Length: 206
Image 1 (cartoon, rainbow, N blue to C red):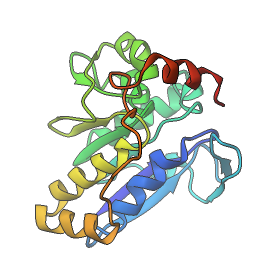
Image 2 (cartoon, helix red, strand yellow):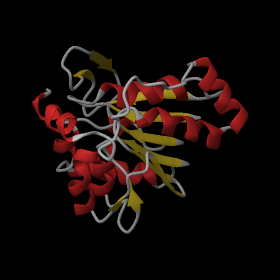
Image 3 (cartoon, one colour):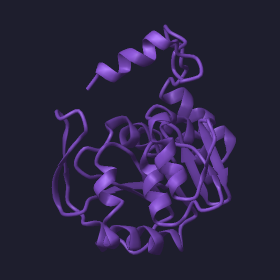
């Protein structure tokens, strides 16, 4: 089972690493990272550098394509070669998925037209500009296409995907192995719940 995750400069780290942690435990799965060019890519926070040996164009098919988000998705939206590759690979996947603003890449590739989809709350207008209808759900599935909301929701998506690739029992065992049992100290994890002061404070964060 071949799972491919494209990385690029300014990718959001948890978008990729959260699902990788989950999907890497799926029996028989091989998770591979690819990049626009072989070499180092640096995450959106600037301190995590990953050496990626494989150019995305070296991959012509996979069972699962998972596109993470981050500020680095924006240049990809205007990269016809990368978008052509996404469309080509999607043609044969079992599942094509995204985390956070990775949904914008699927949208720019024309895969979300007429579908409901989710993404990070700050990217809603961009998502809908690609013909999708935004929903605030954390994970949205339409047959082979699965989108997930911002950053941490990629873990939820990966667990659902693990169940689809194997069975519920295996996915539950992976959840236990990773001790994924969220108990956040604050109830401000969505725009609907966060008070105005929190929404204003986030504008000052890098």
